[in-house]
Length: 213
Image 1 (cartoon, rainbow, N blue to C red):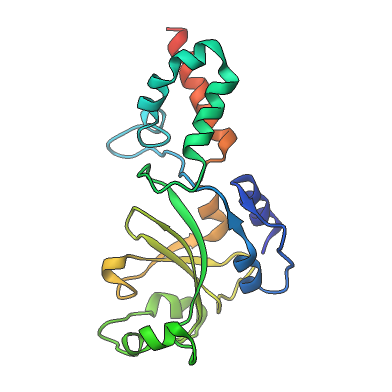
Image 2: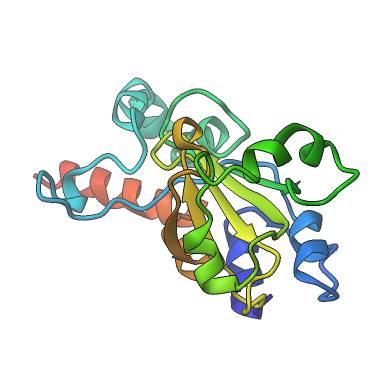
């Protein structure tokens, strides 16, 4: 993978110590995260990024911690990271790094036994979006991310013609591989997330702005 991708993974809390560069599969499966990920807020037709909470519910949490903020700012910021940047399943709109092989076409694997019948049925599965890029109708995949949105599962194909920066494909658990979307490159997707430092910068700016009013 590109060094810029590995750098961003590390910035976001990923462990890349076991990446060797031998293959996309080995590298992805060697990466681990001890935290969840949060996407940056963006402007939408119904809201401005600057007025949106950077993490769902964080405003209420900050209100509860304001006495700590007044007495020990370092402890206050530590409590924010401790609450949100961990492997929590409490619903904050987070994304989870998975890094798990999915092999519905590879004989002899549990995924083949469970899924191959479905994946050979053109009425249930539609891989056109993936085949258009990879030219391989029977690839191995890696489930790279899942979240609470739609699509809620993001995969890469191990037949991707650009293993240094593979394309992410999204599918939802309710339309599993019958509807697939191209979600862009891994590098671009990783850059939609906030590091811990980026979150704290947002919080600090908000608090300073409110104090100066």
